[in-house]
Length: 319
Ligand SMILES: [Zn+2]
Image (cartoon, rainbow, N blue to C red; front, side, top):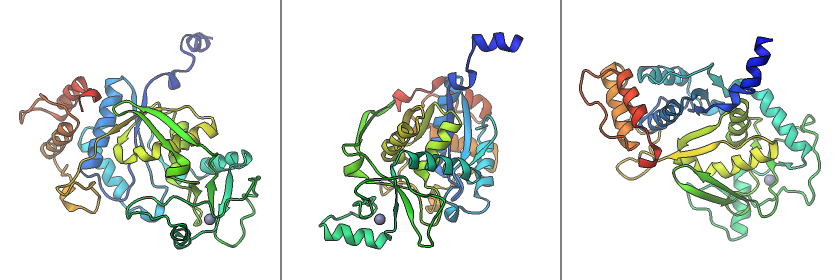
């Protein structure tokens, strides 16, 4: 009875409060750029009295580097960025992704695609559409049937096929980013029908992240601006699957001297967290990038004291 009374006062404590996350891919250790995303999302959660969850995005298993996940955990702990709740591993969520795919199938918005990468660029070239290097290819809809029916997902033929999401015409997605303001993307023109399950059977990042954010009741997605162009796809999937839309805050990227995004291949961006002094030094660099000024500078400051001061100072509007 006591439980019932407290439930009345606070009917859904888990979904009411702020729930943020940091979701690194274990393709290498954290670098200067991913530490910025980790620190920014941690500070935003702590400032809001919320939870900060850690999700290892190891859904693209061939790209994962053995041991990188453990190294990331070690680096986060060395920096005092402690997570709440159990760590979530995407590689163990195949069933929930499959359920989401089946749900989309019942909505008649999935179709199989047998195109190779080469076939897609040939089709685009024949249409006179050039795709600049490093830009995503806009799928020309080659395999899309005239009318989409439910498919038999269980009866996969021996031929390798991917499952694509059929976008409705005029699929314009609009959202507010807390820092960048109003955003919009026309998914038909800028993305095309995108893949949810690859022809090697792996679920894609777009599907996995949407399903996991909903499963973990994430209310705030704080991440690097390199993921901004994925947000419209994720919102469209959330709407189809009936999930709530979290708030989005995209943080500025750390660029190298050539103005390129840092990658895990760039050795110069390695962060050093072997001892507390080094870890604090890395946190200070990340904080500067997040517009945090006037934080305790002395050598005698502990990481815990510094993080507390940074939490008080955190304000994404001053980035
Ligand atoms: Zn195709």
